[in-house]
Image (cartoon, rainbow, N blue to C red; front, side, top):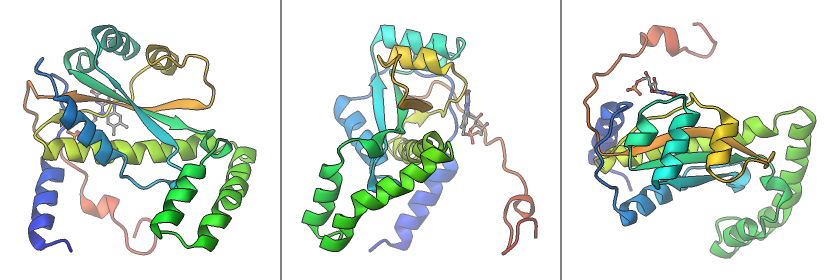
Length: 217
Ligand SMILES: Cc1cc2nc3c(=O)[nH]c(=O)nc-3n(C[C@H](O)[C@H](O)[C@H](O)COP(=O)(O)O)c2cc1C
């Protein structure tokens, strides 16, 4: 059971996170990177389909290609790792037997729920496809995983920056999937040791962003 100490720690970590644009060359140890990506992939996903994956780009050529894809922004070049969060809008068409079987085997889902899930997911996604929303839904799975990653990295003493300013075709080329129409780039997240400190740029007054029952009230 979580304690009030956990709450204090998580609050402090969330409030301390800043988007960092400059990084030291110090590497992120492979075991730590693995752990952090593992925490990102603990994020929830629609139907637990996990319609997202992460590409860790650490080699010089890949980081250079990502920097070019971002119009020359410094972070992907300086950070020892840039994580590319990939949304997989075709996940529901593929074989997800592993997902249903794991949840059934662990007892997390009842036999009945696990048995019904493939068909439920198919019907849900066919409706999304008809409404042109497949990509948008997969992006949600990827974005929530990226959010978990940024918090986990902050807790490990590392810095990140969410990045949306890039050419999707260029990023897809950099990670080796130039022709995959079922894959979409959700977010780039450089990860590493910070070479700058940033002040909190502020958040709008809560009265403008938190409403009660009805939007605007
Ligand atoms: C979806 C998204 C895309 C962003 N894209 C970029 C980007 O391309 N380059 C950049 O330097 N910062 C980018 N940022 C960082 C924002 O500028 C930053 O989150 C905001 O100014 C608030 O600062 P903070 O993250 O330190 O609280 C992005 C943030 C989000 C959430």
